[in-house]
Length: 223
Image (cartoon, rainbow, N blue to C red; front, side, top):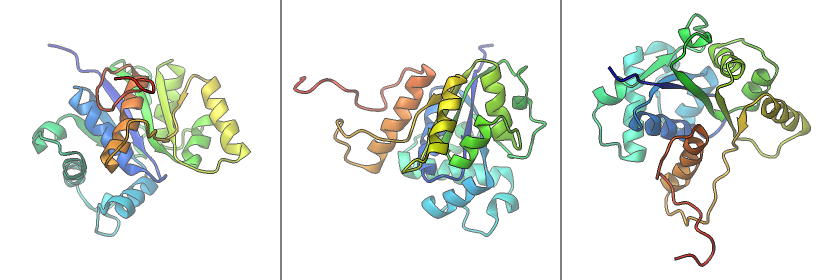
């Protein structure tokens, strides 16, 4: 049986949850299994920015299957996914941020190819940079770094102070990719999805995943 490789995807409490959902969809459609972790502030951002989890404390009150279904419905709404619920539901698991006993908290999980934190808050970034493993997001990131696998940190903050910059430099020096959520406009985006897809494509590029999700630079005046 063909082995299914997987990625870890974490959504934290920075603005830009739509980027995380776009990457989730893209990884699944490239046949990768995804271990999805959403922090408590991440759920709050998804509720605020994407009108998800309308019930109070929905992330704790709903069963995992209901949360997964709402995530998939939002993917279909924003990105016109043409697969059915069962396909997507079977290609990712939703992990509690406090589930430090998860197998992805160990370097022995050899099917893991890498991890992305999209979006990454400055709080999560600083704790990862300092090696603090207070939750599964931070521990998984620490494991990915120590195993010399690809860790992509996608900060969404502006302006940046010297603490933010030092933490980013520390992570970069440890082997992480710092990929800020800063879209380009040379591809003449017409919709929000075009802007989001540009960043999704750049993250996939950093993972080494071939994709045609965005229009690439072709030089000024190129036909």
